[in-house]
Image (spheres, rainbow, N blue to C red):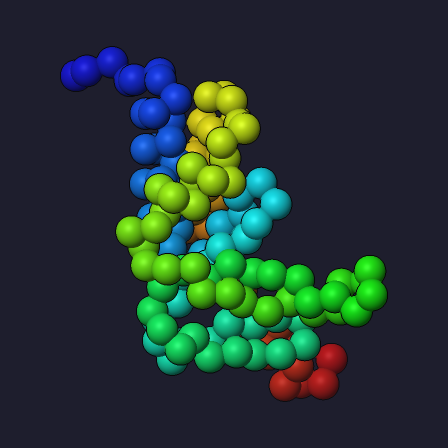
Length: 133
């Protein structure tokens, strides 16, 4: 067994892999101030007030829609294919320390583990709505 590399480059590679896995699970990923999601062509992207259709398979960045200075909704901007993950991380995380990069990776992986252990409760909300509760 080899020791874990503790360089910034290795931390970025681990973060990119964690993001790749999150996209495979259909999850959105928050990097500093930007949120990204991966959708296949034809799948839906939901904002607060609208539902969009992905016109291409790839990564989408969630972007605010403003009215004056107030954010009134969000839209999605096509960013590129999954090959762009390293570029996204390089741009958005350039000012983060090694420790912060590792924390993001651990957070993504820990969230996946916790969601896999939690029972599916979506049927409870649906049942309550059907019963008029």
